[in-house]
Image 1 (cartoon, helix red, strand yellow):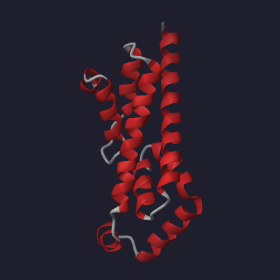
Image 2: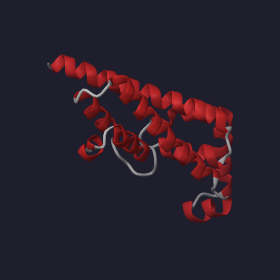
Image 3: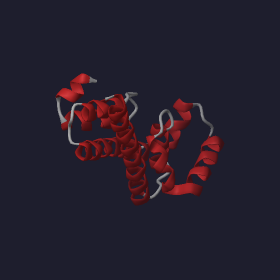
Image 4: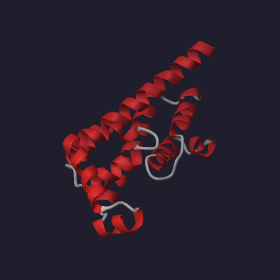
Length: 150
């Protein structure tokens, strides 16, 4: 994690991008390191949000490239089960992207939104909002912790 911090804002962007894809990583720790070491709070939140958002959208486009036959072959899901997921996802649409920040389910949600061709504009909007709120909340928790401990 310190390596990302050594790279400055590019490292923060990279850490958040990677964490928003298939590779599990705690980008919140990197953001906390930035806040603790007196990097600009607002810039750090913006960079973290954009890195995570770009990573989430890359997962969305990865899903967009998916094919039914490959999903059936390698995921052991039947076409009926996939259709059931599709109807649930279509019901909520791009609003589901708001929750793409969540650990464990965020990446599969982003991929599923792309796979089922949910409107890219609503996905873009809600994903950016969700990821931004997450980093704003985490940033303030970190700042509050610093003030409380000091």
